[in-house]
Image 1 (tube, rainbow, N blue to C red):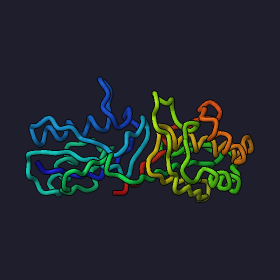
Image 2: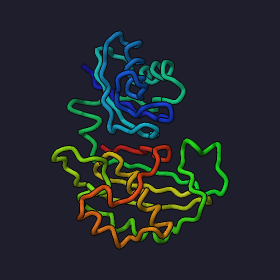
Image 3: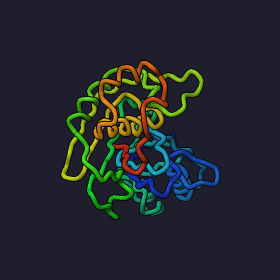
Image 4: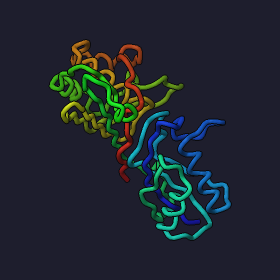
Length: 244
């Protein structure tokens, strides 16, 4: 059967993450319901990454198979007509097996947004972390460099299950200040659960002079999540791009 690759954007505010959960609204669940209405088939859609509750995407990738031989643009129009306004199909295309949205990806990029205005913004409350004070960007950039490369990121991961492999090749961290906003972009071959939010939480502590970048080698070596500081809230995080 044809394999269809979708690129998807969504506002994750109203969803309990990407992955299906019993009795909870999820992005995957909304997509599968829309596919059923189009095809009459129970179709499982596979995502490139399982974004958490409240996390957004501008470049999530997913795939599914169907006996229906619709043109790619027909899939886009049909799904967008049935999906809620906070989920949109950006593109669709046929791909050859054994393409898999998750396992065929070789790197992903996430961006985290921080708003440092003194007054809260009603327009940014669901797309940025509001921190009403100045952060030392120079110190944050210096600390971020120490995270680059292949490391065991257990200290920046959610609870590790069993013998989970926590080795990640973190290829890029870019921190940009745009007026009252700070944009932190990370690219890696893979990401662990909460990894980006935990790294951002630590870098914010560095920016507030509560922690230093010199701690990072010992934190990585310790493989202890409790030592690495707070987890940034979900609303500032966006899955930007998945590379194949």
